[in-house]
Length: 386
Image 1: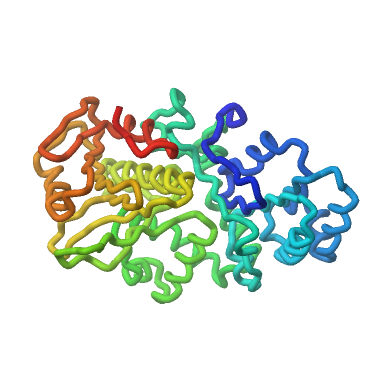
Image 2 (image 1 turned 180 degrees about the horizontal axis):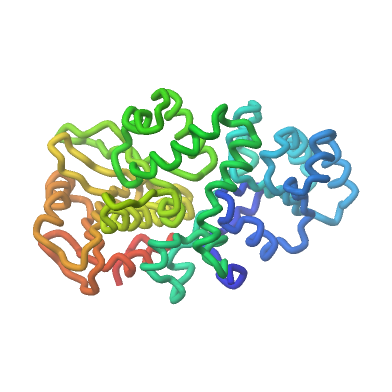
C-alpha cells in the first residue's frame, strides 16, 4: 500500500507550496506527516464555494484555531484569492506554517497572483523513485504501468491508467476552460506521445493534430503547467561542435505515456518499450534533482552530425553523460556517442544503462544494468555505483 512506502521528499521548515500531478500522493503524504494540521480541502464542493465567495474567511478560521500552527490548503489553485490572505497572515508573524498543495500552477499565474516569492518555497512531489520502492520495484512493471502512486497502489492498475488522462482532461483542462476545443486537445495528447523521448518538432505535431503550430505550443505549455510533461534542453556549454536546437519531450510517467501511445500493426513493441525505458530514466533524474534542491540540471546532447547522448546531468557536484539502451547486450556502436561526448568533455562520467545483468567497463564507459542504476539513484548521494 502507498501509505506504507516512505517518500524521499523532505519538507522545508517554513511555509511551502507542494506541487505535483494528480495521484502522486501529496494528500496521503501530508495526512501521514501532518496529522494535527488545520486542513482545508478545496476539492470539497462546500469548502470551494465558501472560500471562493469569501477568501478572508481563512483568516477568521486560522485565528479562531490558535492552537493549530500548521495549515494545509489542498488544491490552492482552485481559489487563487486565498494567496493574498496567506500572505497577510505570514506577514503578521504569528508562527504559522502554510502548506499549499496544487496539481497546477497555471491558474495561479493566469490570475497574476505571485507565488509568495521569498516567503513560500516551491516543492514538487514526483512519482515513486525506485529507491523508495526498494524490493517492490520491478523494472518490467514500471515500464508497463509507471510509478504513479495512485496506479501502483491500485488493485487494477491498467484500469486506473486508462482513465487517468481522460479524468485529468475533464477536471483540469475542460472544467477550467484552458482550451477552446477539447477534441483537438485530446488528439494532441495522443499525437505528442510519438515525441516521447524524441526531439520535439511542433510543426510535425501540429500536422498530426490538424491545428496551428502556435496552438501546439500553447498545448505543450498547458501540459507543463499541469506537470504532466517536461522538456529537456540541449547541452551546449563550451561546445566544440554545432548542436541541435530542439528540446526533447517526455510525459512525466512511463505508465501515463504507455496509456496515451497508440499501438497498431505498424508499431514495433521494442520501439514503444525503448521510449518508455528512456522516459523512466528521465523521470527518475528529474525527481532525483528536484529532491536535491535543483543542484543540477538535466540536458541531452545531439550534434548536427547525429551523435546523441540521452542525458547529461550537469551541476556543482555532478557531471554525468548517460545513454539508455533497451537491449540485454552491449555492442560497440552503443557506446560510440558516449565516447564522442567524453572526448569533448573529459571531466564527465559516462554511463550506458542497459537491460543486461553485468557491470562492464568498455573504455571510458561504465555499463550498468538499468534497474540497478535506478535503485542506486539516491538524492542524498552523488554516486550511482556500488
